[in-house]
Amino acid sequence: MEKWKTELAPADEQNLARAAELLQKGEVVGFPTETVYGLAGNALNPEAVEKIFLAKGRPQDNPLIVHIASMDMLPVLTNNPPELAFKLAKAFWPGPMTMVLPKSDLIPDVVSAGLSTVGIRFPSSKVAQALIQKSALPLAAPSGNLSGRPSPTTAAHMMEDMDGRIPMILDGGPCSVGVESTVIGVGTDRVRLYRPGGITVEMLEEICPVEIDPGVLHAVEAGRKVASPGMKYRHYAPKADVQIVEGSFPAFRTFMEQQKGEGVYAIVFNGEENSLPVPALAFGAEDDPAAQARLLFDLLRECDELGAKRVFVRSPRVTGIGLAVYNRLLRAAAFQIVHLNESGVAE
Ligand code: TXA
Ligand code: MG
Image 1 (cartoon, helix red, strand yellow):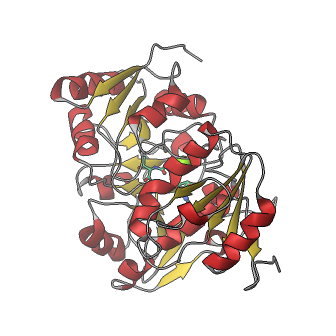
Image 2: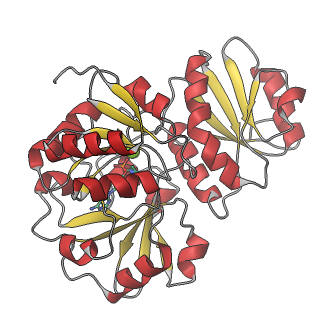
């Protein structure tokens, strides 16, 4: 892989123009979106797309999503999309929703990892839109982390993973959503949820019925074929062993008495962090899943910096964007869940 002196560049006019030029030349650049930072390349150029896979160390069977900045690109990049796709686009674009649709011949096989479909997203981030417009290209972009690491929600986090691997990261400040986009397969009269995100199930249900793919809440058995390859991978994992803990806060506190020791940390709701026998990071209020979404990946990275070996996380509510928080935590925890009874004993 080519070795770069990676530049962290404020997302101003001049740097946006330089980033657009790099993209036109077939290079890849880091950029902010409202969800997480992404690693962009020209979606129509297979060599540029290869560079994305290489820089991330991403498995070749995991397809990329394509970012657009105008509704007109939807029918160009897809093949005969159902009416429902336009209805959803009208309701939720620009925004954190990726629609999986039959791909047009313009989309190279490396982008779709050989599938006949492609994921398309029109981000609401003004910097992302400016980059797409200035480069005049649809941009293939996965999250800008090394494969398997938590997605970056700041330019500095992306730098931790991509330093030396890409020429430039545009810094547009912290991401407002903090978890990746909602990924849905779009049929004629319903959608299937592959990855929950900022466009919630409740919001989608205002438009049409939603089927939740079992991979959203359950581990995919080894070897099983999945509709959305990202569901297979552990993902979002800090170096520590993460476990989700279900039960009341008093039960959690008792349980942590038994767990305490070197490298043991907790991630808890605001206000709980000071009454525990182990160091704890606060995650947002219990009834504020949007805050939890914004903080989750940052906290997972912070656990690594603190040298955490085991991290116990209070189980979040699964309504609204809380489902996205829980879905990412499940993967960070490799689906390990502890259920506590009222005495703080694991059942
Ligand atoms: O918010 C986001 O979606 C961010 C920002 C940068 O836009 N991007 C992102 O990309 O999260 P990535 O590659 O990390 O996640 C895309 C997910 C993967 O789980 C992938 O398997 C799934 O979408 N996906 C992509 N194309 C698909 C397809 N044709 N069919 C099914 N799943 C697909
Ligand atoms: Mg990712």
